Amino acid sequence: MPAITVENVLVLPRVSDPGPAAPERSVVSVTTAPSGFEGEGFPVRRAFAGVDLRHLDPFIHMDQMGEVEYAPGEPKGTPWHPHRGFETVTYLLDGTFRHQDSNGGGGLITNGDTQWMTAGSGLLHIEAPPEELVASGGLFHGFQLWVNLPRSLKMADPRYQDIRAGQVSLLTSPDGGSLIRVIAGDLDGHPGPGVTHTPITLIHATLEPGAQLRLPWREDFNALVYTLAGSGFVGAKKQPVRLGQLAVFGSGGALTIEAAPQQESRSPKLDVLILGGQPIREPIAAYGPFVMNTKAELMQAFEDFQAGRLGTIPAGHGPGL
Ligand code: MN
Image (tube, rainbow, N blue to C red; front, side, top):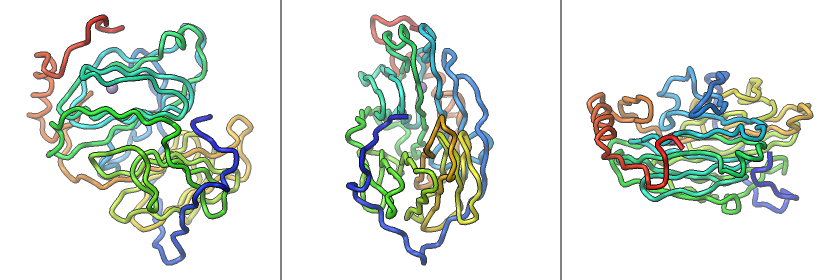
Protein backbone atom coordinates (compact mmCIF):
# COMPACT_ATOMS: atom_id res chain seq x y z
CA MET A 1 0.00 0.00 0.00
CA PRO A 2 2.24 2.85 -1.12
CA ALA A 3 -0.13 5.85 -1.62
CA ILE A 4 2.30 8.47 -0.34
CA THR A 5 4.62 7.73 2.53
CA VAL A 6 7.51 9.53 4.24
CA GLU A 7 10.69 8.09 5.72
CA ASN A 8 10.49 9.95 8.98
CA VAL A 9 7.08 11.19 10.14
CA LEU A 10 8.73 13.09 13.00
CA VAL A 11 9.70 15.89 10.60
CA LEU A 12 6.02 16.55 9.81
CA PRO A 13 3.77 19.15 11.47
CA ARG A 14 1.75 17.66 14.32
CA VAL A 15 -1.99 17.81 14.74
CA SER A 16 -2.80 19.29 18.12
CA ASP A 17 -4.30 17.07 20.78
CA PRO A 18 -7.96 18.02 21.26
CA GLY A 19 -7.38 17.90 25.04
CA PRO A 20 -9.28 16.05 27.75
CA ALA A 21 -12.13 18.59 27.75
CA ALA A 22 -13.11 17.92 24.10
CA PRO A 23 -16.30 15.81 24.07
CA GLU A 24 -15.39 12.39 22.67
CA ARG A 25 -17.56 11.10 19.82
CA SER A 26 -19.09 7.71 20.59
CA VAL A 27 -19.49 5.00 17.96
CA VAL A 28 -23.08 4.70 16.71
CA SER A 29 -22.57 1.66 14.47
CA VAL A 30 -19.97 -0.60 12.88
CA THR A 31 -21.05 -2.29 9.63
CA THR A 32 -19.27 -4.69 7.30
CA ALA A 33 -19.16 -3.79 3.61
CA PRO A 34 -20.55 -6.52 1.34
CA SER A 35 -18.48 -7.44 -1.71
CA GLY A 36 -19.76 -6.91 -5.23
CA PHE A 37 -18.66 -6.04 -8.75
CA GLU A 38 -18.71 -2.68 -10.53
CA GLY A 39 -18.56 -1.65 -14.18
CA GLU A 40 -17.22 -4.41 -16.40
CA GLY A 41 -16.52 -6.58 -13.37
CA PHE A 42 -13.94 -5.14 -10.98
CA PRO A 43 -14.27 -6.23 -7.35
CA VAL A 44 -15.55 -3.63 -4.86
CA ARG A 45 -16.65 -3.42 -1.24
CA ARG A 46 -19.80 -1.29 -0.78
CA ALA A 47 -18.59 0.68 2.24
CA PHE A 48 -21.90 2.41 3.09
CA ALA A 49 -24.28 -0.53 2.54
CA GLY A 50 -26.94 -0.78 5.24
CA VAL A 51 -26.18 2.64 6.79
CA ASP A 52 -28.95 5.24 7.04
CA LEU A 53 -28.34 8.11 4.58
CA ARG A 54 -28.97 10.60 7.41
CA HIS A 55 -25.81 9.33 9.15
CA LEU A 56 -23.83 9.54 5.90
CA ASP A 57 -25.04 13.01 4.79
CA PRO A 58 -23.36 14.74 2.84
CA PHE A 59 -21.83 11.46 1.56
CA ILE A 60 -23.94 9.14 -0.58
CA HIS A 61 -21.94 6.12 -1.62
CA MET A 62 -18.43 4.69 -1.33
CA ASP A 63 -16.75 1.71 -3.00
CA GLN A 64 -13.40 0.30 -1.97
CA MET A 65 -12.00 -0.92 -5.31
CA GLY A 66 -9.84 -4.02 -4.76
CA GLU A 67 -7.38 -4.60 -3.30
CA VAL A 68 -6.86 -7.02 -6.19
CA GLU A 69 -3.83 -8.53 -7.93
CA TYR A 70 -4.80 -8.79 -11.59
CA ALA A 71 -3.41 -11.35 -14.01
CA PRO A 72 -2.35 -10.02 -17.45
CA GLY A 73 -5.41 -9.15 -19.55
CA GLU A 74 -7.67 -9.07 -16.51
CA PRO A 75 -7.93 -5.41 -15.34
CA LYS A 76 -11.40 -3.94 -15.89
CA GLY A 77 -13.08 -0.55 -15.82
CA THR A 78 -16.51 0.91 -16.53
CA PRO A 79 -18.23 1.66 -19.85
CA TRP A 80 -19.24 5.28 -20.63
CA HIS A 81 -22.01 6.33 -18.24
CA PRO A 82 -23.68 9.54 -17.04
CA HIS A 83 -23.83 11.35 -13.68
CA ARG A 84 -25.78 14.33 -12.39
CA GLY A 85 -26.25 16.06 -9.04
CA PHE A 86 -23.12 15.18 -7.04
CA GLU A 87 -19.31 14.86 -7.05
CA THR A 88 -17.14 11.73 -7.40
CA VAL A 89 -13.80 11.49 -5.62
CA THR A 90 -11.47 8.71 -6.77
CA TYR A 91 -8.32 8.05 -4.72
CA LEU A 92 -5.85 5.44 -5.84
CA LEU A 93 -3.52 3.72 -3.38
CA ASP A 94 -2.00 1.21 -5.81
CA GLY A 95 -2.16 0.87 -9.56
CA THR A 96 -3.28 3.23 -12.31
CA PHE A 97 -6.70 4.36 -13.52
CA ARG A 98 -7.68 6.57 -16.44
CA HIS A 99 -10.66 8.93 -16.49
CA GLN A 100 -12.18 10.76 -19.39
CA ASP A 101 -15.37 12.81 -19.47
CA SER A 102 -17.52 14.44 -22.11
CA ASN A 103 -16.72 17.87 -20.65
CA GLY A 104 -13.02 17.64 -21.57
CA GLY A 105 -11.84 16.55 -18.12
CA GLY A 106 -9.71 13.52 -17.48
CA GLY A 107 -6.29 12.12 -16.90
CA LEU A 108 -4.28 9.33 -15.41
CA ILE A 109 -4.02 8.79 -11.68
CA THR A 110 -1.59 6.50 -9.92
CA ASN A 111 -0.26 5.69 -6.42
CA GLY A 112 -1.64 8.33 -4.06
CA ASP A 113 -3.33 10.59 -6.66
CA THR A 114 -6.94 11.77 -6.47
CA GLN A 115 -9.42 12.74 -9.16
CA TRP A 116 -12.24 15.01 -8.15
CA MET A 117 -15.09 15.29 -10.62
CA THR A 118 -18.04 17.57 -10.04
CA ALA A 119 -20.77 16.09 -12.22
CA GLY A 120 -23.13 18.97 -11.38
CA SER A 121 -25.63 19.46 -14.21
CA GLY A 122 -24.32 16.34 -15.90
CA LEU A 123 -21.74 14.64 -18.07
CA LEU A 124 -20.70 11.26 -19.37
CA HIS A 125 -17.48 9.61 -18.25
CA ILE A 126 -15.44 6.44 -18.45
CA GLU A 127 -13.11 5.02 -15.80
CA ALA A 128 -10.72 2.31 -16.94
CA PRO A 129 -7.22 0.95 -16.44
CA PRO A 130 -4.76 2.09 -19.14
CA GLU A 131 -3.79 -0.40 -21.87
CA GLU A 132 -0.34 -1.04 -20.35
CA LEU A 133 -1.92 -2.15 -17.08
CA VAL A 134 -4.43 -4.35 -18.90
CA ALA A 135 -1.48 -6.01 -20.68
CA SER A 136 0.71 -6.41 -17.63
CA GLY A 137 -1.85 -6.99 -14.88
CA GLY A 138 -0.76 -6.00 -11.38
CA LEU A 139 -1.93 -4.58 -8.10
CA PHE A 140 -5.00 -2.31 -7.99
CA HIS A 141 -6.44 -0.64 -4.89
CA GLY A 142 -8.41 2.55 -4.40
CA PHE A 143 -11.76 3.99 -3.51
CA GLN A 144 -14.49 6.11 -5.01
CA LEU A 145 -16.61 8.36 -2.83
CA TRP A 146 -19.78 10.21 -3.87
CA VAL A 147 -20.31 13.61 -2.22
CA ASN A 148 -23.79 15.08 -2.52
CA LEU A 149 -24.47 18.61 -3.75
CA PRO A 150 -27.14 20.85 -2.23
CA ARG A 151 -30.18 21.76 -4.34
CA SER A 152 -28.60 25.12 -5.20
CA LEU A 153 -25.52 23.45 -6.77
CA LYS A 154 -26.94 20.31 -8.37
CA MET A 155 -27.05 22.00 -11.76
CA ALA A 156 -23.66 23.76 -11.37
CA ASP A 157 -21.20 23.48 -14.27
CA PRO A 158 -19.09 20.30 -14.27
CA ARG A 159 -15.58 20.74 -12.83
CA TYR A 160 -12.51 18.54 -12.79
CA GLN A 161 -9.56 18.53 -10.37
CA ASP A 162 -6.45 16.39 -10.47
CA ILE A 163 -4.74 16.15 -7.10
CA ARG A 164 -1.26 14.64 -7.23
CA ALA A 165 0.08 12.56 -4.36
CA GLY A 166 2.76 15.17 -3.68
CA GLN A 167 0.17 17.93 -3.07
CA VAL A 168 -1.55 16.13 -0.20
CA SER A 169 -0.87 17.71 3.23
CA LEU A 170 1.11 15.34 5.44
CA LEU A 171 0.84 15.53 9.21
CA THR A 172 1.54 13.34 12.19
CA SER A 173 -0.02 12.77 15.60
CA PRO A 174 1.41 14.08 18.90
CA ASP A 175 3.06 10.66 19.54
CA GLY A 176 4.44 10.38 15.96
CA GLY A 177 2.70 7.01 15.47
CA SER A 178 0.47 8.02 12.58
CA LEU A 179 0.88 9.41 9.08
CA ILE A 180 -2.09 11.65 8.29
CA ARG A 181 -2.76 12.61 4.67
CA VAL A 182 -5.25 15.48 4.30
CA ILE A 183 -6.67 15.09 0.78
CA ALA A 184 -9.47 17.64 1.01
CA GLY A 185 -10.85 20.11 3.49
CA ASP A 186 -9.07 21.00 6.68
CA LEU A 187 -7.80 19.29 9.81
CA ASP A 188 -6.91 21.45 12.80
CA GLY A 189 -6.04 24.40 10.55
CA HIS A 190 -4.01 22.30 8.05
CA PRO A 191 -5.74 22.51 4.64
CA GLY A 192 -5.64 19.76 2.01
CA PRO A 193 -5.58 20.46 -1.75
CA GLY A 194 -9.11 19.32 -2.74
CA VAL A 195 -11.62 22.14 -3.29
CA THR A 196 -15.13 21.07 -2.43
CA HIS A 197 -18.54 22.65 -2.99
CA THR A 198 -19.90 20.94 0.12
CA PRO A 199 -17.61 21.51 3.15
CA ILE A 200 -15.91 18.19 3.95
CA THR A 201 -12.68 16.77 5.35
CA LEU A 202 -11.16 13.68 3.70
CA ILE A 203 -8.15 11.95 5.28
CA HIS A 204 -6.18 8.77 4.66
CA ALA A 205 -4.28 7.83 7.83
CA THR A 206 -1.77 5.03 8.46
CA LEU A 207 -1.28 3.99 12.09
CA GLU A 208 1.68 1.96 13.34
CA PRO A 209 0.75 -1.13 15.39
CA GLY A 210 -0.45 0.00 18.84
CA ALA A 211 -0.57 3.72 17.88
CA GLN A 212 -3.46 5.88 19.04
CA LEU A 213 -4.83 8.75 16.97
CA ARG A 214 -7.11 11.24 18.73
CA LEU A 215 -8.17 14.00 16.37
CA PRO A 216 -9.98 17.28 16.92
CA TRP A 217 -13.11 17.13 14.73
CA ARG A 218 -15.46 19.96 13.76
CA GLU A 219 -18.65 19.66 15.76
CA ASP A 220 -20.84 20.62 12.78
CA PHE A 221 -19.40 17.72 10.68
CA ASN A 222 -20.42 14.09 10.79
CA ALA A 223 -17.62 11.53 11.25
CA LEU A 224 -17.05 8.19 9.50
CA VAL A 225 -14.03 5.89 9.69
CA TYR A 226 -13.58 3.14 7.09
CA THR A 227 -10.87 0.49 7.51
CA LEU A 228 -8.91 -0.04 4.27
CA ALA A 229 -6.41 -2.50 5.75
CA GLY A 230 -5.43 -3.96 9.09
CA SER A 231 -7.35 -3.99 12.34
CA GLY A 232 -7.86 -1.75 15.35
CA PHE A 233 -10.34 -0.03 17.63
CA VAL A 234 -12.58 3.03 17.44
CA GLY A 235 -14.13 5.32 20.04
CA ALA A 236 -13.50 5.59 23.75
CA LYS A 237 -14.98 2.12 24.31
CA LYS A 238 -12.48 0.65 21.84
CA GLN A 239 -14.90 -1.09 19.53
CA PRO A 240 -12.96 -3.49 17.26
CA VAL A 241 -12.80 -2.77 13.50
CA ARG A 242 -11.07 -4.54 10.62
CA LEU A 243 -10.67 -4.38 6.86
CA GLY A 244 -13.97 -3.54 5.13
CA GLN A 245 -15.76 -2.11 8.18
CA LEU A 246 -17.30 1.34 8.55
CA ALA A 247 -17.67 3.07 11.92
CA VAL A 248 -20.26 5.86 12.20
CA PHE A 249 -19.55 8.28 15.04
CA GLY A 250 -22.04 10.38 17.01
CA SER A 251 -21.59 14.04 17.85
CA GLY A 252 -18.64 15.58 19.69
CA GLY A 253 -15.37 17.45 19.22
CA ALA A 254 -12.82 14.59 19.15
CA LEU A 255 -12.57 11.11 17.67
CA THR A 256 -10.23 8.28 18.55
CA ILE A 257 -8.79 5.46 16.42
CA GLU A 258 -6.26 2.92 17.64
CA ALA A 259 -4.27 0.30 15.74
CA ALA A 260 -4.20 -3.21 17.17
CA PRO A 261 -0.74 -4.00 18.58
CA GLN A 262 -0.56 -7.16 16.44
CA GLN A 263 -1.32 -6.85 12.73
CA GLU A 264 -1.35 -9.50 10.01
CA SER A 265 1.97 -9.79 8.18
CA ARG A 266 0.24 -9.06 4.86
CA SER A 267 -0.95 -5.62 6.04
CA PRO A 268 1.36 -4.66 8.91
CA LYS A 269 -0.32 -1.30 9.67
CA LEU A 270 -3.84 0.05 10.13
CA ASP A 271 -5.01 2.14 7.18
CA VAL A 272 -8.23 4.14 7.53
CA LEU A 273 -10.20 6.72 5.64
CA ILE A 274 -11.57 9.41 7.92
CA LEU A 275 -14.45 11.40 6.48
CA GLY A 276 -16.58 14.23 7.75
CA GLY A 277 -18.81 16.82 6.20
CA GLN A 278 -21.54 19.33 6.82
CA PRO A 279 -24.88 17.56 6.43
CA ILE A 280 -27.00 19.01 3.61
CA ARG A 281 -30.32 17.88 5.16
CA GLU A 282 -32.38 17.95 1.97
CA PRO A 283 -34.57 15.19 0.54
CA ILE A 284 -32.63 12.72 -1.61
CA ALA A 285 -33.99 11.00 -4.72
CA ALA A 286 -31.19 8.75 -5.98
CA TYR A 287 -31.25 6.13 -8.67
CA GLY A 288 -28.26 4.60 -10.46
CA PRO A 289 -25.94 7.39 -11.62
CA PHE A 290 -28.16 10.33 -10.57
CA VAL A 291 -28.62 11.94 -7.14
CA MET A 292 -31.36 14.57 -7.08
CA ASN A 293 -33.91 16.03 -4.61
CA THR A 294 -37.15 14.80 -6.18
CA LYS A 295 -38.45 11.96 -8.37
CA ALA A 296 -39.42 14.46 -11.05
CA GLU A 297 -35.79 15.67 -11.21
CA LEU A 298 -34.62 12.05 -11.51
CA MET A 299 -36.98 11.45 -14.42
CA GLN A 300 -35.76 14.67 -16.01
CA ALA A 301 -32.15 13.44 -15.63
CA PHE A 302 -32.98 10.17 -17.46
CA GLU A 303 -34.82 12.09 -20.16
CA ASP A 304 -31.90 14.54 -20.59
CA PHE A 305 -29.42 11.65 -20.73
CA GLN A 306 -31.46 9.83 -23.37
CA ALA A 307 -31.76 13.01 -25.42
CA GLY A 308 -27.95 13.46 -25.32
CA ARG A 309 -28.17 16.60 -23.18
CA LEU A 310 -25.63 15.28 -20.63
CA GLY A 311 -23.00 15.17 -23.37
CA THR A 312 -21.83 12.76 -26.00
CA ILE A 313 -18.96 10.28 -26.16
CA PRO A 314 -15.93 12.03 -27.69
CA ALA A 315 -14.87 10.91 -31.18
CA GLY A 316 -12.57 7.92 -31.29
CA HIS A 317 -14.31 6.00 -28.52
CA GLY A 318 -16.74 3.15 -28.92
CA PRO A 319 -19.83 3.09 -26.70
CA GLY A 320 -18.31 0.57 -24.28
CA LEU A 321 -14.57 0.81 -24.95
MN1 MN B 1 -18.90 7.01 -12.72
